[in-house]
Length: 379
Image 1 (cartoon, one colour):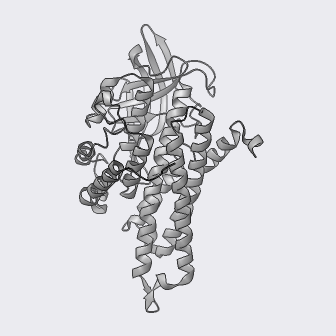
Image 2 (cartoon, rainbow, N blue to C red; image 1 turned 90 degrees about the vertical axis):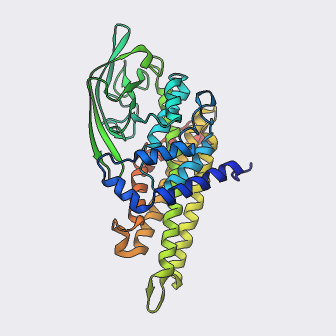
């Protein structure tokens, strides 16, 4: 199998990297974080102009029908620039629409940069188990009434539309009885509490109080949303793995530059062999993580659900381990400056830490990997 990027993918990556360097530098990023919205309309327009928003959208809706490998290229570059725009939330939401085969008009708006999405999937009690759902949907005439709360919805207050998982039947932790809806974020009965997360992103706690939606808002079959939810969550994990690779590349490069310039006893500290060994170990961790991220991007489209789950969880677990090691080493090699907001390294480490906790941490995915059928026999 050829793992080299195509000419088009390389050109796209180069264009996106130039845009980040020119229009989304570290100082500009800090200004966006401190702004009231926490995102930039100018940056969003720039992503749309580059074609990044159209890339995952089907050609029928004005997109480029990009594969997971294409998305890996984009997420790596956005990770390298620690871009905080709601790109991840929007393209993950778009995947729900693509797999459901509904709301082609919304996909067209996403491709044009007119709509931002957020995924209201987690709840206070659910932690990493997305099937643990207390929010409810009740039949009401030709539509439904939604009630309940969702927590830590990434860019939930900045979104125009929300993808919402609710329980339409069954017990709270059943995989059966889950339904998925797309809802206008400003619909009557929705309240959103916006806040900044540790990595500079924005998230929101969202409450649904007798929110009326039509039957056309349903993305899954009634009670049959788990397979769709599980598949798109795995797609989201694959995107996060790719973003982590970009961040690890950037944090490793920044650390190497620091070792070449910081002097002690009259020589650059990079001359000390023990620090050279640490850099070598960081590089090896990064390359192993890159291989797993690529494998996950290849297998995410597999028709074998067990293979998809197994590969994605293996990638998230291995990349979580690598990110922790690389981030901690980078901070320590920078000394006290490594934890200050004046250096990009601290921001990168914070982002790696929150990615580790998003859509399942390392322990969660190790347990999921082991739980897949065939694990014991294969061992």
